[in-house]
Each structure stands twice: as C-alpha cells, then as structure tokens.
Image: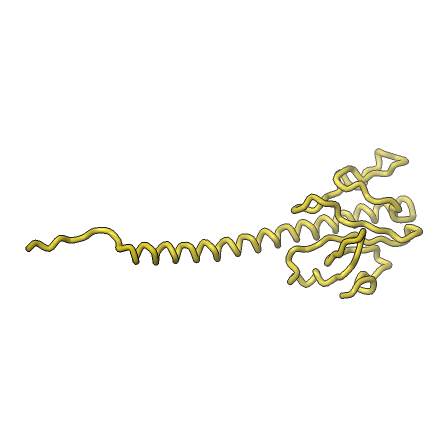
Length: 153
C-alpha cells in the first residue's frame, strides 16, 4: 500500500483558528468602541471650554451673562451689534446632535453649561446636576459658582 500525504487542515484546526481570530476581533472592537467614547468626550470638554470663553467675552461687553438660551448650532453674536461675533457656530453634542444645556442666574450674574460624558469613569464626570429636566455629569460655570456645591458630587 502506498502512503498518501494529505495536504490541508483538519476541521478541528480550522475551527480553532477561526475561534482565535474571533476573540482577537472582539478585543479589538471593544478597544475601538472605548476609544471612540473617549474621543467624543474630549470633543464635549473642548466644546464647553470654547462656549465658556464666548460667554465670558459676552459678559465683558455687556456686564452680564446672556439671559436667553444660547443659539446652539448657529452664530453667537450680539443681537444689538450683529458684527460682534462671539462664536461662529455654537457646537452641539457630537453623538446625538442635541444642544448642550445652558442656564443662567435670574439677573445674569452667573451661568452653568452642561454636557453628558459617555465615559463615566472619567474623573471629571462626577457632577450630578439637572438642567432643563435632564441629568448631566459634566459642566462648567462662571467663576463665581462652584458646580460641586450646586449638584451632588
């Protein structure tokens, strides 16, 4: 009898290889999703910092913070002097496209602006504040307010 050499892989070897590739793909996908969340949170933090700068410029010009809701998704300018531009386009949430929440003191002497961070393990996502009927875990405010005193840290 002649010995025939068999070329190729057995069914078990193929299944083990597919299983290993599947596990590696799942680990990579989980890491990718986590990275996407962190990137969107970085955008949210940057957005709120830029909005804070624009609000502070408005306050420097008018002596008070804007009393009305901000025009999210549109230009933020001085209604009395449209040529005075504070921000070309007020940003919205990068995932949902919803507005960030802005609230001001009754007399325009303070403000808070809020967003929700997806990565709740982020050290700055410790705020527990309500704005416009929704809960938020991250916010910035005027210098005369401590957000941790407003919400439950």
